[in-house]
Length: 101
Image 1 (spheres, rainbow, N blue to C red):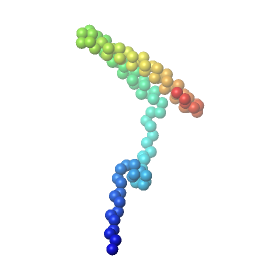
Image 2: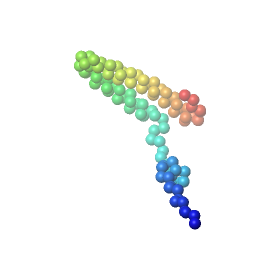
Image 3: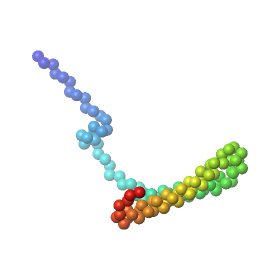
Image 4: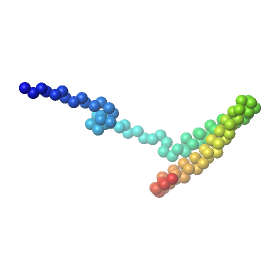
């Protein structure tokens, strides 16, 4: 008489379930294709942070945290570079040109 071997366990990890067709990807569209609104919000928030930190400059200097002010200034400046980049990229996408950035 031969002994029956137990059936192999069914893998339950997401990768195996996806391979068997048990999991389905939802059709979710991206919220923001251009990135421009997100960068603009960042620029505005860094500008607000800079102005608010100016009121506390003496306290920041006393505590050795004056660099916070310059982080806000750098974020504001780099945001403009990001806005230029995103605008250029979005215009290329709309024109149907390849984007190689």
